[in-house]
Image (cartoon, rainbow, N blue to C red; front, top):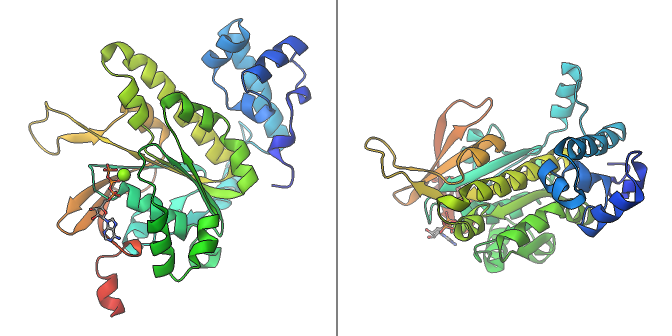
Length: 329
Ligand SMILES: Nc1ncnc2c1ncn2[C@@H]1O[C@H](COP(=O)(O)OP(=O)(O)OP(=O)(O)O)[C@@H](O)[C@H]1O
Ligand SMILES: [Mg+2]
């Protein structure tokens, strides 16, 4: 990115008055990027007025980003879409099987959701990706660091150290490029994601991991009465993440918990939590299941992958293929 998206201040926008700007800045919307990723209802709360006016303001900010070439234009020839898709990068997961399931690895400009029951390997995949993303591009990585957002206190630097070592990387160098953030409640997570663009650029990362996207909201918004509010907040969160993935050409990986469906009589009684809100915004959804000593990964939802499943295992290398150790020895 030649020009910094962070350099574009609100003063670059023609339709914002001094008072409105002040209100926006006070609410933490300080740049064109912040405004472009804001949501209409949130803006109405900040500056008052109608939802239409708020939408128009957001649109103006998005137009500005488009003019600067920092956001995709709205109506473009398919050839340009293809060009943009070509700038898309993929990162190996550390398991050949898993990479094949993903047609090459975790993609930029997309959100990949990983869901499954406890111990199915969600956090292990996140830890492994922190390492593999730092492999050079010609070895299947992004050659860049990552941001790890932990909501469940399961981040383990020792484990990162072990995986890096097992994969022949210098653990100290690698750990230096993994930016860790512990999140304490749902508002903290929302605020963090609001400001994430700044951190992505500052630390020059290519991957953002959130383990897990839903646990805090799920714990804080309990019962039917608060469901609508929770879904609205999750919707805002996930759409902002998708926008960031597109603007910065980064990969976003989120983990999700399972929700039991007690009324299921046939088949698997679990489904991902978060309902349609999460389902629609995530580009890829992977379901993990325990399978003896190994794990099974199933591609549940994807714009162009067929329904497929594969096996992987968890060992000192993070995740890898079930027979990789045997073939090594
Ligand atoms: N160094 C290691 N070698 C082999 N297996 C490991 C290693 N570290 C962790 N595991 C395995 O990983 C599993 C835990 O996986 P993980 O923490 O990713 O689950 P999760 O899906 O995130 O679960 P939760 O929903 O509880 O967060 C355990 O079964 C553990 O045995
Ligand atoms: Mg976990």
